[in-house]
Amino acid sequence: MTTARRIDGKKMAAELSEKITRETAALLRDHGIVPGLAVVIIGEDPASQVYVRNKKRTAEACGFHSVQHTLAADSTLDAVLALIDALNNDSNIHGILIQLPLPSHLNEMQLTQAVAPGKDVDGFHFINIGKLASGNTGDAFVPCTPAGCMLMIEAELGTDLSGYSAVVIGRSNIVGKPMASLLLQANATITVAHSRTADLPGVVRNADIVVAAVGQANMVKADWIKPGAVVIDVGINRIEVSEDGETRSKLTGDIDYASVCKVAAAATPVPGGVGPMTIAMLMANTLRAARLASGLGLN
Ligand code: NAD
Image (cartoon, helix red, strand yellow):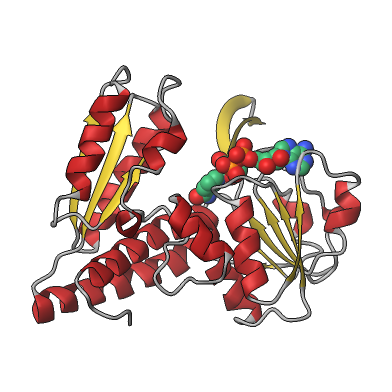
């Protein structure tokens, strides 16, 4: 019985954040530039508030100028657009993030497309999506979650995935589609599976690389996994568990981690896998935005 390597996203993210912190200090010392990140949160979704707090804390730890704009849940579209416009024109701000989900009266597409492409550190603007899809990633912003997944896959298999087959489960614009683009760019042979896919276990069984981004607790079972596969779990699901006669809630991913680890070569845990890497990649994108906006090359 094999036991998969645990891909330690928390450790990788800490190392990446340390590197970003060093580069941020050098940017200030050599060019007098401080990367600025603005996070806009509309409404009071509790999970979003936790995410935004973590992003702000990490941005400050990296040495960034970090601002948070908290708007009331009933803010008008015009009010939010006016704030985005002001941030687009603020030279101290290099990255703008609109925390999702939005209150239902606001249109996600309208707001994400209002962010200047050069400050779109989430990689949601059509210009950045187009650059990624066409393989022109030189000055593009790639969505943070798939970018973080890619670093974890590269740490296991290297940067050239020629000959590997990859299955991405989920086709969202935030995770599934950009993940597929990144894997394709690295020469993997990709399949994007989703809720209408027939025989999902059979499809996944062919994959050397599995990325699960569905939002269904423990959906991917050990007998779906090809022996020796690398498995990346994007899902974040809150479930109730009974322990010692008590019911408590805990986070779990889309893969049945304990059983999958008996078959896979390596797998990411939840928590401590993709989540921390997502935040670290947001910092990497913000530093990148500051360098590009200042006419400096990327190092
Ligand atoms: P989404 O709801 O936009 O997309 C889910 C995708 O799963 C859809 O494409 C759908 O077709 C597919 N799907 C649904 N049921 C399926 C089934 N039975 N079989 C196969 N495919 C199915 O979600 P999303 O925004 O892409 O997020 C997916 C998960 O990843 C969620 O749990 C979310 O919380 C998590 N997430 C985590 C991070 C992170 O930083 N760790 C970031 C983003 C999203």
